[in-house]
Image 1 (cartoon, rainbow, N blue to C red):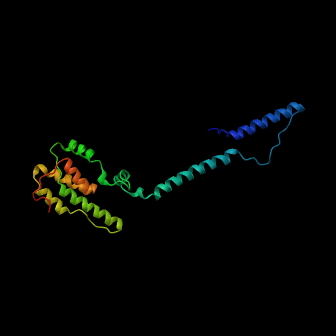
Image 2: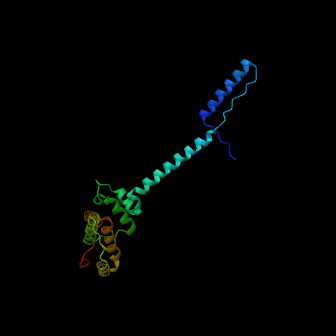
Image 3: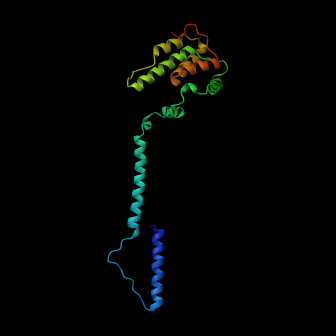
Length: 195
């Protein structure tokens, strides 16, 4: 069983009491009996419960603050995206050069972006966000028939670039970013892909 160590204050009081007791013994050269109080309460019975209560209370306050924070209940991807963009910066101010570098690195030098497709899905994402903020809700904001038909009409070599354009528009939700990235990389030749 662990032995409990008294606090510094209690240790100091015990030292003073001991010195006084030795001083009385030396002066009187007689035995001195210490007076015992009828009721003694060990310091540990008061100190440790107070410390434990303080720790539990601080943990409770931390957990309560976490539970009351609205960002706790958002998906991690949305929390990261919100942390990346503040009220003063928008998604259109994302680093286009970094995006260009990453897209070229992952998809090769032949990559292209369908600017109209990207912009259309970006505008739809912006409208959905506005509807969500105003309290309106839509069941499905993505027109799957349009995505599938556009994908099927795209040539075999450029199907992945069509989906890249849809993804950039829908996820980032910035028509300005779509036009900037299309200028930086290159535009895909559009015949009749987007209706």
